[in-house]
Image 1: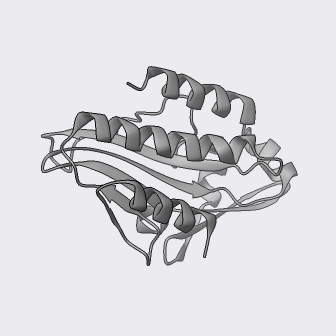
Image 2: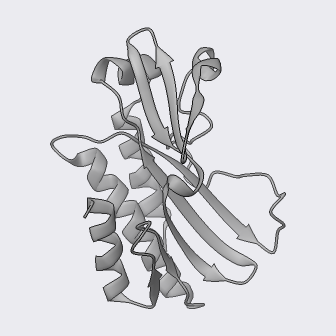
Image 3: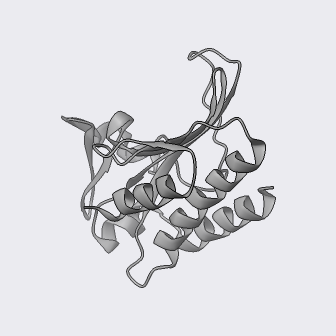
Length: 170
């Protein structure tokens, strides 16, 4: 069992979460605003723990808030300062990224390859109901420390952004 699946199970036991054991995703199905803000805090704390661990883990996110919008609505990152699936790499590497299948992507830098998951292969948390909900998806960024530096991943900036998001959460 992966650590994100364990987190998923632990979160699912705490409240009205629907949890998918296969993907490690979980979804808060409550309309309660307090429960929703607690769910967001739990996810932010989990992501912060990845950055603050002795063996820091780089990750990328897709975070969106939907309030009666269609699926065609533009993606607005609700975690500013945290690298997203669409902007974590310098543009010069965009042409090197290829879909390997099953949601796995590979890109290349001068220092070597990097890998990440996209779409449904990402871990995900959502909360809300109907046409008003929030979600955060995340994927580990797998590569050497040299490649991570080449990509410009800044652990301190990500930690600061997560702390700011936590402080801004109700």
